[in-house]
Length: 371
Image 1 (cartoon, rainbow, N blue to C red):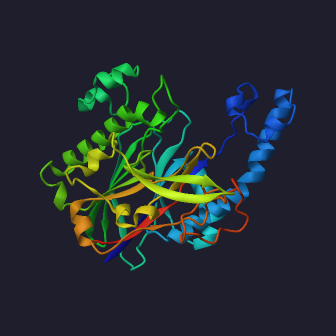
Image 2 (image 1 turned 45 degrees about the horizontal axis):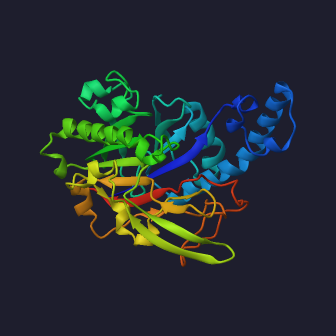
């Protein structure tokens, strides 16, 4: 019996407009910066028109990426609310896959922008086995003090013991797939942010993500017992906003590119999952240059391919699927994304240089045998 499991950051699946760019140029879309808009009313009209005009192509591509993943269960990040998810599934995804994802779950979390994690599930796997949800739980209200995770690093960032650990949530689901128990933990960890006081954004925010990964592990160990997690069927899915290695992309369109793999030597928040075999990042089963799920660039001087999107498997699930590797769906990437040789794909219709695109992230999907 198999289950096809996926994770995908769909990038701002929103039902609202953001007009703050009129007063804050840092929040203003680049196309509106080309025009001299002096009236806030006119600005709002233009911003609404821009968003509506761009969204249809974007969401067609998002739906195509999900359809290509062809998952029985897909974990999503950056979903505005249940209304947004339902409208997207009915208006776009249904046209690609039909009556597929009838089960949808979203609990409002802590994100200041209102973006949440969500899960969509089929009623049956592709093999015809029933997918049954037994329990779902949000951990959005858990504080550093509740789990004893408050420390000096967090205090230096201006946080307090009573602050919430998860910047979005850790959504916990317990299911039976064809009668076999399976637990799922869906997260979207703290973003890297901008550099501060000479420290790059990733390392400046590392204590927050490390606390989140420690909390996820604590939740799982509390559920199964610290000495029993290795024998249970669980997966941790989501956008982790961190990596343990990456690829430097060096060069320009004119000169050509070379790709240099790098290992993180200063540590990663994800070491909490990997260092003692608590869970396996199954994307590491792919070739070193073929693990990336996001392209990041700040001009030609800083270009990277890195994995931010993860399916972590429990040791039991990893062993049961030892010969399998995940797929990464990259056809929705914009043309500015630089692919290593041999990895080029046919892009979806109307994909642009930078936008429209399916998302800045790529879906990760894997077929799992459950035992």
